[in-house]
Length: 458
Image (cartoon, rainbow, N blue to C red; front, side, top):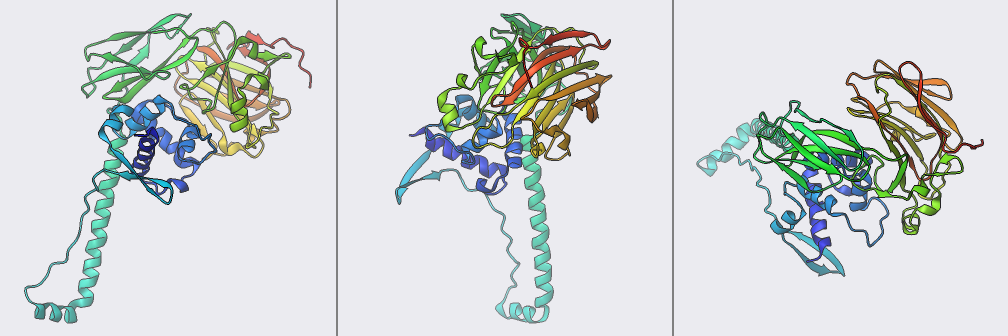
């Protein structure tokens, strides 16, 4: 049976479980919520772009096929162990009508609750009662019906919330003892599973579908990593993520990769050669390094530059400065991004700048504080990104001040420490350019800088 039939059925079942009406009317906000629910169920961080492609919201190559980890995530959201388990427990048939293929779902229909009025013993008594008390009974009946519908709605909402609630609600002791190392690096994880409910425990890395099985009595485990970069490890209880931690493998200077997914997604990266990292005194990747079919079929993509090392700076007291622009003019897009992330052992400090008028798409994080342009006014981060801009972030005792061209544009306070800074990550939609980066410690001493060869002119 065609894989496409199973995918179509899976998407239809997700649409039914998501319970937000027909997917053709879903907004970007709906896809963000669905992305979060799938992540909570599978620990796979699908992008909204992937979900929108699957549901036909974005232009997609006719030969597009979702990756195995994507299909596994969809199956996990529906309660199956993986994609093969979903296919084994579901059947699909196709019937041709008007030269189109229709997917027929084989699942049982849900039981419905029916309300039947109580009948009197004789027809005469019914007629008499209807004449004398018809209006009163109709009001009473409608009241009972309305109350019953409310009870059913509350039960359905409670059941839905329970289906997406993690196995535990309290914090879980799970961390990397040695979160930074040179490749190859074996990370030691410390964990206490004694207070967890569940029968099966495991650790899953963001870039892999394989799981490291754990016994409930295990207090530590070890995972090797060969490729430089950053990783997220998820602690699973019966396939449900209950905690996560990160670890880092040092790079030899800057590296760059491209992706068609969200730039924050760790699952889909294609590493480019070292010659693609910088050009003409800038952190910049020429258009020629991107595969022709991507430029032809999609027009846009994301580039991510990262430098993983011990910068000897504490994330809660530092200053970071950079100069950037993004004057790309790819088709099918009006908003262009530049992200600047200082990666800490315990959290991130992430600034996000966009083209003027696009601030609704802003997404930033400072420790536990997540800022979303959809529900907060972040218009100062929308700027003339096609021309050179200078940004500066100053953090003093977890109090963040952000400056654009030496003007203070935003302040925010966070409470959870981000730890030691072990990575700088610069991302852009298409070919953004960075002139320089500078990192200062608490004493305002310059501890790291790179001008990428210099020579950039205005």
